[in-house]
Amino acid sequence: MTDPLFDTAVTRAYGTRLPVVAGGLMWLSDAAYVSACARAGIIGFITAASFPDPDRLRAEIRRTREMAEGGAFGVNVSMLPKLVPGERTAEIFELIAEEGVRFVETSGRNPAPWLPILKAAGITVLHKVPSVRFAEKAQSEGVDMVSIVGAECGGHPGLDLVGSFVNLALAERRLDIPFLIGGGVGHGGQLVAALAGGAAGVVVGTRFLVAEEITAHPDYKRALSEAKETDTMLSMSSVRNTIRTLRNETSETVARLEAENPEIGIEALLPHVSGAIGRRAYETGDVSRGMLSAGQALGLTGQIEPLAAIIGRLEEEARVALARLRPAILQGQTQGELA
Ligand SMILES: Cc1cc2nc3c(=O)[nH]c(=O)nc-3n(C[C@H](O)[C@H](O)[C@H](O)COP(=O)(O)O)c2cc1C
Image 1 (cartoon, rainbow, N blue to C red):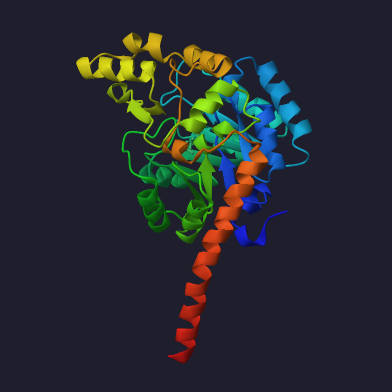
Image 2 (image 1 turned 135 degrees about the vertical axis):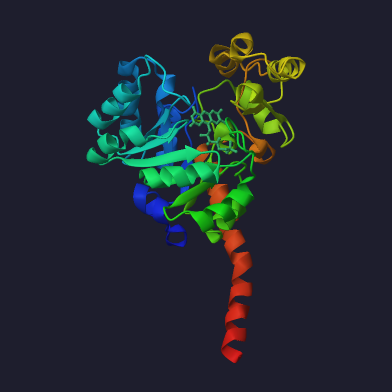
């Protein structure tokens, strides 16, 4: 049931208790994690790209539904910036519709060509963008809601690298559809700030990586729980695919290669940035190698604990933030009455 304090377009669209979205996490947002989100009163998204075999994706959707105890969940469809031959996007959307999934999170490319099929299937589309200008475009194409992730975010912050606080103010001025703010969110006070600024919710990735339900080696989570907000770095800008990852051997190497030769091109970087290396780090816990997406919210991670405990703290912090504002609001009212 929606918490009346946090009743927004997001909680109404998803039927969640809180206006918090757990964004798709390549290799990591599986049934265990996404169903934990549902049980904790938020919505998470299974990353379709983690399941190249359609039957495995179908099975994961079914497993999530069983484990979600009636809570909302969706599927993340991350598209490449340009359509490539052999891309499975149409097939994935069909599968999602067939399975009766009601919510999708899209990213990477504008989902406009698929909107008629998705709308016909009654699916709510949340599109994620790294800049308000792309949010305006998505709004004009007809998506239901947008998430705007700022420069602080783990994964792909785009090329503009505008911070989340500026995105919030710009989005409030320029958008009519409900929007969420992400990038660096890991404290309930930020949720209240986002709602006060006109957002309908927040999207979180990094802060939840230390959840017990994330399927990764405990050493990986331990490393993240000990990391600071300064332990990430940006690379891949030379190939127009900027990514924020944990600072380690691989990300330092990639950044050095790019600095030495700005024309280097993706082929020369692929041996370092291949997803398989990162996936190994999740399995072995050795975080020295692999492009491990992580954002500045690493400074807010704390210990490894159940997702419900992390969400509980976020909620408590949000209540404290609201209580901080209340005396000021009441005082303002009294002064207004006296005037
Ligand atoms: C480990 C990791 C993997 C991610 N994988 C994806 C992905 O496959 N697709 C996607 O749309 N976003 C992906 N993201 C982005 C998140 O969904 C979310 O937008 C972002 O983490 C929010 O910023 P934050 O990390 O500062 O909370 C990933 C983020 C992380 C940290």
